[in-house]
Each structure stands twice: as structure tokens, then as C-alpha cells.
Amino acid sequence: MKELFKDLKIVELASVLAGPAVGQFFAELGATVIKIENKKTGGDVTRKWRLPTEDKKKPESAYFHSVNWGKESIFLDLKSEEDHQVAMAYIKTADVVIANFKMGSAQPLGMDYDTLSGINSRLIYANLTAYGEDNPSPGFDVLLQAETGFLYMNGAPNQPPVKMPVALIDLLAAHQLKEAILIALWQRTKTDKGDFITVSLAEAAIASLANQAANWLNEGYIPQRMGTQHPNIAPYGEIFKTKDQQEIILAVGTEKQFAELCTCLGKRELVTDERFVSNAQRVLHRTALQAILTPLFLQFNQSILLARFQAAKVPAGVIRNMQEVFELPIAQGMILEAEKDGEISKRVRTVAFQFPRS
Image (cartoon, rainbow, N blue to C red; front, side, top):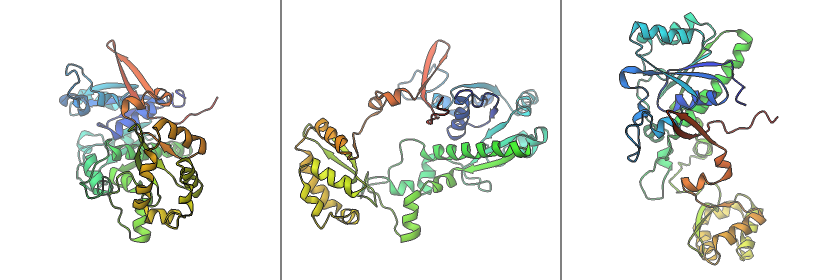
């Protein structure tokens, strides 16, 4: 799979998370990715976004490592004629440029699409903005989570909003931009010409509202904070303590699964209880259902119940911290390592698919 894009050359003029995540995606698939960083400011700002426990002498933070594997970093001052020519030499033979310049700042640097396509007609210019090409407002993930409805929906009932613990909107925008670049590359095979493509963080976020948006657009329902619970399914997202004070979370989405859940817990009669005979009824009476299920979970140790649920195909899981996640074999297979100056850095692969099979 590392050879899929071995002939592809990408120049990354982007920083922070969304743009660099796109660059790493192509690097993982074999592309040559040249990351041009601002020499005057010390490079990508995330180089300095360290945890309090990180060694300040290290040139790269753990955050920077997360989306900058497999790239060649070059520090340039694009306002310098000499450095500008170095950048242009790379761009002249590039297939893709990834950029996230602030509105109005690319053109004075000669790094806008019109200028670059003039020296490379096959160039695909992939641009990221916060709110669109005509809105100069800066894009910060927590603000986008707020502005596009995620913050309002996320958190516990009657509690303040809670942001997602990763820069979710940046990652959603990165996926959109990857898809746009792949389409543009495919289109170029027909036309032999590049193109300008753009993705805004706001539109990427709104495009990902899925059923929550549909609940409003079709039913006029404004999604509320429900913790881990689901507005359309029950019991889905409910968390229960077990006899050994461990936790199990449920994701029961069908009538068969609910019946099996009741059987595993020794409470089969719940299946015919009028309050729980259908998913719609369970959503309506989810508080009563949770009150009934809570003491039933307390009769079993976690491992016993999980084994029962697995055998009966009841969707259930445990809540893992990051150490526990990376003890899983599937997570171990997602780790990418790199060596620089005798030190090993690690990050998670951005490519989660397996292709080709052979």
C-alpha cells in the first residue's frame, strides 16, 4: 500500500492539524510530501504545543508528531526572494499543494492558485478555510464545535456543554479534503489540468451532523445534551456498574438484541412489558428502563456479563483509557514509528483501510 502514490509529489503549505493530516495521509500511501514551514516563526506552531511533562529541549512536540510522519520539512521565509524561489521550484513539479493561508495572505506571497497554476497547469491546489472563501474569521476547533452545533449537543443533561477531546472539526475537514484531492486527481487523468478545490471547516462540520441534523430538519427537534445516550435508540449509550465496580456500555439497536439482553440479565419478562415492547417505547421510557436494569447489572462481574453478551450478540463494551486502547492488538497495528536524531517518535496511522488485499 505504501507504493500507491509513489510518483505523487505534494507540497504542504499548511500548519496545525487539518492540512498536515491530509499531507500525512498521502505520505503513508507513498507520496513525497515536502512540508514548507515558516522559518521566521520557528515552523509549524504545533512544534511548541507540548504537554507540561514533555522535554522542552525537543524540537518537536507529541502533538506535532501526530500528523507529520513521513514528510521532509523545509524552513523557508516566503517573503525572502531566495527562499521564495526554492519554494517555487518544488511547486513547479508538484502534483498537489495543500494550503490554509489566512484570507488575503496567499496572494502577497505569490502562493495563491492563480499564481501557482501559471507555472504548473497540472497543479491541484487544495485550500482549507474556516468559514468559506469570503469569510476572514479565523478557525479554531472549539469555536467551530460551538458554531456548528456540536458543543450544544455534547455533555450531560443540565450541565455545561463539553467539547470533543480531539480537534474533531479539523479531522472532519481533513477527510473532506482528502476526498476532494482524490477526485481532482482522477479528473486530471481526463483533462491533464489541475484545479482549485476548497473545504471549509464549517461546511465539513455541518456535513457531519447526520441524524442530528435530520431530526431538526424533518421533525423540528433540537438535539439536547444526553451524555452518552442516543436520541433515537434505547438502551444505547447507557452505562451500568457491575458487581466488581466496573462499567459496561450498551448499544442495543434492534428488538432481537433487546430480547437477548433481557435473557442474559435473567429478566426476559421485560420484552413483553408495554413500556419496552418497541424501540420507540423504550426511548419514551428510557429512565424507567435504566432504573430496572441498573440493579440487574450489579448482580454480575463485568467479565461474566461481557462473555454472555458476546455469546448472545448483544452489543456491549467497556470504557478504555488511552493506555488500555493501545494494549489492543488492533490498535498496536495502527502505530507508526519514526527515528530522528536517535529518538523514536510514535503516532497513529491516518490510513485505516486495507488495500490492496494481495
